[in-house]
Image 1 (cartoon, rainbow, N blue to C red):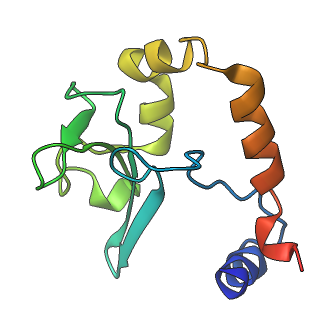
Image 2 (image 1 turned 180 degrees about the vertical axis):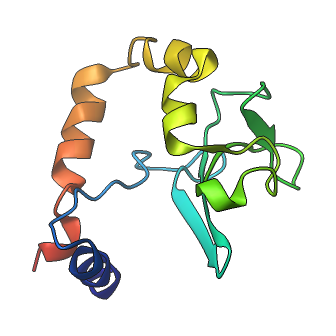
Length: 122
C-alpha cells in the first residue's frame, strides 16, 4: 500500500489523505474505494451498505452490496448509474446522504484521523 500511495502522490504532485474501511471487525461487505482504469478513462466505486439502491447507487453482482460509482467524463454512460465527480457531489441523493448524522461520530472520526497517513507509519 505504501508503494501505491507514493505512486499516487507522485502522479498528483501532492500528498493525499488515505481513507480505509472504518470497520475494525467487518460484519458485512468491506467498505473501501475501488478503481478501474482503461485507455478510455476510469471508474471509482465505493461500497455503501447504508445507501441501498437509488438513482445513483446500484448493487454489485453479488446482489447484496450497494455501490456508488464515479467515472471520468469520458466514461459517462458506460457504467451503471455512474456519474462524473462534480455531478455526483451535486446530486440531491448524494447531498441527502452527506447530511445524515454520523453513528458514533467521535469513534469514527478517530479511526479516520488515525488512517490519514497510514502508509507512512513504520
